[in-house]
Image (cartoon, rainbow, N blue to C red; front, side):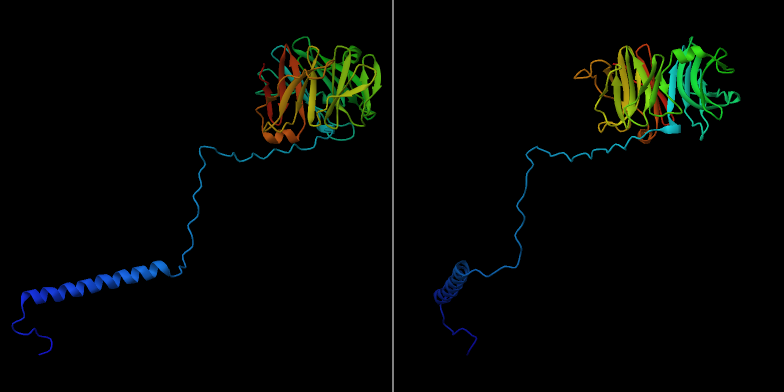
Amino acid sequence: MAGQWRRGTSAREVAGVVAAVAVAGIVGALSVFAWQHGYPTATTASAAPVPTFTLGVRTPTPTPTRTAPAVTAPGAEERFLALGSGVMWRATAGACNGAAPMLERSDDGGANWLDVTPGYRDVRQIVALQSFSGTEADIVAGVGDACEVQGLRTYTEGEFWAPDDQVLNTLSYISPSESSTVVTPAGSIDAPCAQPWSVATANDSIAVVCDGTPMVTNGEEWTSFGIPTAHVLAAGEGELVLVFDDSECEGLALKRSPIDGLAGQETRVICLDVDPTASEASAAIATAGGQAVVWAGDSVIAAPQE
């Protein structure tokens, strides 16, 4: 009967049948494998990306270069700073027909300031400031409606001020009535621009800032320092100390340059620890005994000495 083994079938016959079936299965599997190998089916999977290797080399991300703001004439916001013996003086210019000037004194390194503006003298504009006799000070100012130039000196640490013509024989300044004229003890000279500021003298040379560029003359012609981002300068021992914008500094930068030997003699640039926004406003600098002090923004700081 179908589906049953006949009686009497030997074990040898059964084993032969099983072997034949196994051989047929193997042959079939080999045939399918051979077909697929010869005629592979298409795949829809995308190729894996090729791996990349840095081999220990990293390309740094470029740091954006800070764009220095344009430097313009500070006008009534021009600042002045002077150093005495344990005393500092600072002032803002004001304008004869505009904002009032301000004059202050500090006895604690700039932590606190006392207003000593001689308003009772009808001072309308301050154009120069210097320390005198250690604890006292001189100013050159435009006084009254006519903005008459006067030298004023204090012998009472700023409490009282008196006119003193001797002051005009020691200081150089921009004329409050003729902005393109530099007045010196030896006489007046024409500035190299219409609105210069920050007058400084050293040796027989005079320097000013014009449109952000320091200019220097020995009385014959004006020479450019080639720095278009200067805010202020001051004179030291035969040198000019410049405060300017530099792309390598977050805020302001400082460097010293010999006043009568510009080419290749500049010292290194020093970055000043001041608020970056201070570079967009007026600044002042004073020197004494090789030390430079800068007033920028709300800070009065001593620049690091080399």
